[in-house]
Amino acid sequence: MANEECTHDCSSCSASCSSREKPQFEMQNKHSHVKKVIGVVSGKGGVGKSLVTSMLATVMQRRGYRTAIMDADITGPSIPKAFGLHGICDGDGENIFPFVTKTGIEVMSLNLLLEDERTPVIWRGPVIAGTVKQFWSDVLWGEVDFMFVDMPPGTGDVPLTVFQSLPVDGIVIVTSPQELVSLIVGKAVKMAEMMNIPIIGLVENFSYLECPDCGKKIEIYGKSRVDEEAAALNVPVLAKLPIKPEFANQCDLGLIELFEGDHMEKAADAVESI
Image 1 (cartoon, rainbow, N blue to C red):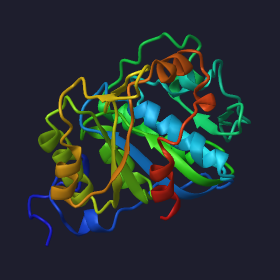
Image 2: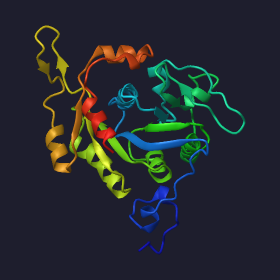
Image 3: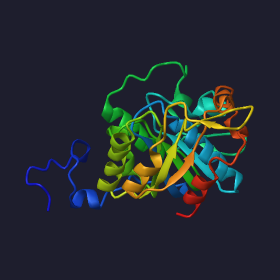
């Protein structure tokens, strides 16, 4: 039963009620057909969420799926740089056309709508949330098998908007060893449960450093607790990404699609099975 004091503004409320159980999704662009929407979230910034988004999309594209990325981190977009995308998106007056990467991944980001990509976006929450909705309704995505939504960290306006406005099929939570895993991940898991969003699993970034001489895995941030925390939350661990300078260099050069290794294969399997 809904609270008698309900204002019908779910953006300021975390209660579970009938309004939240039956969300009214934003209308998808009429010329688009996105089959599966996967959110990539984190409890805090700086854990490599955009890297995981980029790598997952790349692996799924390599497997023959039509893949897209919606960069919902409006004030801190980094997806275009990882793929070497610059310039302004075209449109036809009714639809906005996404950029397409070298391997065919469709991408939409606010940086691709700015005259100068270095311009800071100083907007309030409602405007940012409205932009995310427009990325869904105004962008001509076409036929997409898997769309990955790279969200800003935390449990604020944008994740809430995505969960309420888009038909999200599941989320991947990105974490790192140096975090207070039980607290940060627990919040993200709790939010997903409150919003009735399936949790695909956890990806731990910066998990270890591999010695170039002997191959030994060195946990420079201390012993990882992700396995025990995942077990306590009944959530699978999908990947443990090493600290690899190659990943950072490829992102800086816009060449993330060239990354090598099978680090994200288990995560891709989990996404593929949805």
